[in-house]
Image (cartoon, rainbow, N blue to C red; front, side):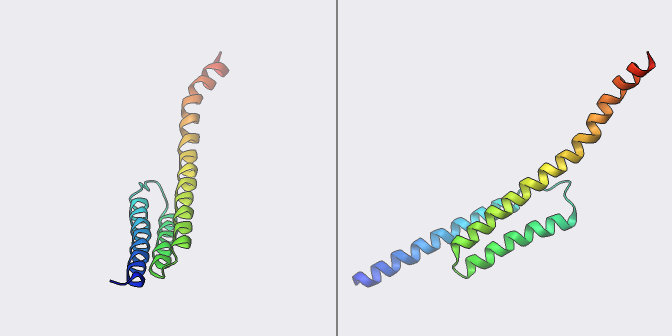
Length: 105
């Protein structure tokens, strides 16, 4: 095998390693729990992950990685919003008996 062939093979192996890492990260992100998310939010999240696949298939691994980071940030932000929606009613229910007892006295 010539030196050129060896370098080409190593280059291809590195590209495949990068692509496989992106595919693994995307699969991991897709497995994140999304309970409580609206259907449109789930579609937007999946669209971001799909965009990373497309970029990866085009051998644009750096932009594919950016899309995965954006998808992860999107999921985290939506999860925070959902937890705020859960927290507010729960805190009102916990606070209401105290408020009633204070007003009643």
